[in-house]
Image 1 (cartoon, rainbow, N blue to C red):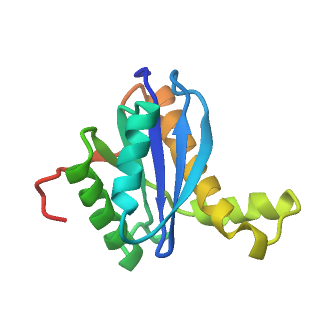
Image 2 (cartoon, one colour):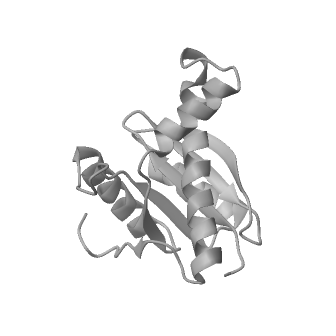
Image 3 (cartoon, one colour):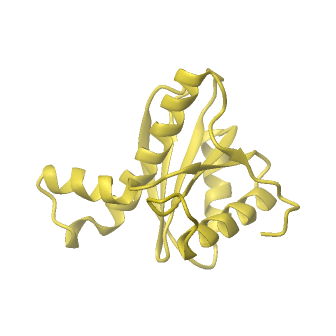
Length: 153
């Protein structure tokens, strides 16, 4: 397991959920929800510096069949923008059903959807990052694929 803090990102159309790992890559915890739009990449770049992250993990929303969707293209484009703006590698990892799992977990804890909109994005980011950490620990290799900042997303 590579040591160091990672930042996990759940890209949505209105909000971006952000999570972080501990230094040892064992546990993901929520950080904040960043509004999507002007300044979103700059805020994530600030968070990378604040927590001294060595890598960003971005969830790649695929259809259950594994095919790409409009959301997949949006996440790829956002990951490309992050890769170009941040001085750390950005990795795309499969995030099928992370938002659904996050909403279900919040419902199970007694929170309703209306009061949980911004929190659900953070919980989805935690789920994405935790899956990436668990994969790396079990496979002894980095998760997902590195985004090339020059690929022109």
